[in-house]
Image (cartoon, rainbow, N blue to C red):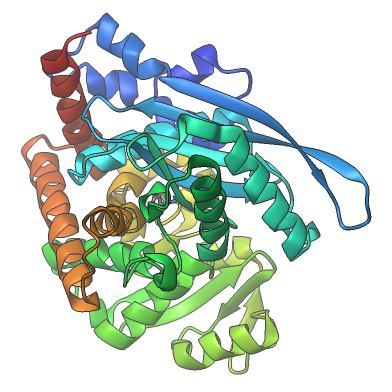
Length: 427
Ligand code: GLU
């Protein structure tokens, strides 16, 4: 089904997310007007790839060197590059490239004026103290120099990074550039120019497009049973919004340790406070304890993978009876699993449509920073809903007209926009 991914051709390493990010490009691109080999070449390679070796002093006085990356894929549509920064022991160039490519499509699909980028530092943040994390973040920012900036490239939180990390980046950039524009990073704390609604934005976006698709499928969201894999920022916010705003029944939730499950529905307010008090889901009353593998194949209507790449594999694709799978994480569905799900007529909302809530509100944060004019929370949420619902409608319509998956349709729309921009600008 899939053609060899563009990243498999030219990468030093491949990873699941790399394959997944790239696998559809060539076959979908062939259907887009104006596509040719020159365009394929442009989109195959990143515009800029930066690798930095970052020595920092640890609290015990020793020195450790960490490898950091920033990949800027394509900004033909104009505007600065944009994308998150992740801290994880498995961060590598192949993965960061693949995620930067996804950001290019994401921004094009939801029509925000950014090119795709991604950054990462290969480290285990759980093993670093707060002061070590601060030194690492500041040193990474310094190493990137002028490659980031309010009109160049704007990092934001991603896996294992948060508002505090963004605050240190802003501070370091401001000092070294004699420039106090908070627009250099998004996802900042509110006190220093963060936007209302940014923290919950990815989870809220996941819920918005899920609600839209369920409506088109004539399924009642409040009657639907949800399983959410991953209970970090995205998964926990999606659960909270599904529960409080839509009265949905969430029957299973997991984190890296395992899963809590109750086929009659979990008490989400209690689960959220249990997690914040005990820092674990294990031992939550009125629930069964399952492994992640077991959770993913329990009976449900909507399965939301909100953890790392590759969790929805062939086994899950064959065994799940979910009607809808929503890619809240980046690239959780493997290429092989995607083919099985298509055959089984299980709807998959692709990550580039399901999870741009974060980057959309990052765009609003950037606009507010540049204008020095701040919006109220309801305005942020209303605008987010509008942009995502419009993207959803375009995607759904093209998928019906062309009898193709939402993944193909979303990529077709994004590619059409990027290709037109490349052509009209010339190269
Ligand atoms: N890390 C998020 C993503 O992958 C947000 C990126 C941003 O806000 O720039 O979409």
